Length: 317
Image (cartoon, rainbow, N blue to C red):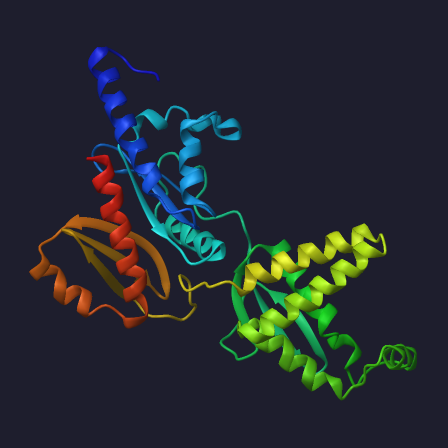
């Protein structure tokens, strides 16, 4: 701990103890965390697949994040938003950092590239694009170019659209026939891909089972490179089919509220993008109409995170 004078050292020690006391109250699932100083100003925003473990690591060696060592003594409190998936947490972090970059964050926004997956019909194919017009055949956006392309590879492995085209050469038709595919399969293949991209649970589960069986067969045949590729495709498909509601292109501006034990949580959405949250004291009578007017699809999410805000504040007092 670096400080000048005994008073500053003592204050830093009190802040450090108070912030660390909040860590055990964090959930072990995915989410976004925010460190704040004693004046409530954001110091740093990050994301995690395990909030408790990730936040606790700041009081460890920090290894590849040594530049943050000077920040840790300034942490007076921790806020967090618990998300429903790692992909959702990644989008929320990106949204928040694009709106405002705290001092200790190095970049505005995220490192992953946002992409859409477009399902073409004639000829049947999949495309990864950076921008897509509203369409029943454009899905996303998803974060991570590598993840998106691995997911597309897994989809085409199970639903080989390239063999279902009516524009195949003679050699391609012969190969498709040998593998049991025909142009007539195109409709079924396309429907299967779309069902997965719409996150239909039956379709997603069936595809995961298919690719898992292929991976086990590859392992049994000592084809370890293929098995590793299949595992990467499974993980990428899990990534793109996870719950993700914090960025819906073309969405409206909205505000949602959650209230618990004297604290009001405000979630700010702009153009379908949840990009910030605020926590402030409020009386039940003032909070009730705000909570009641919140968009129904956000009420459970907001309430869960209002409860978390109370837990984190209580543990640090």
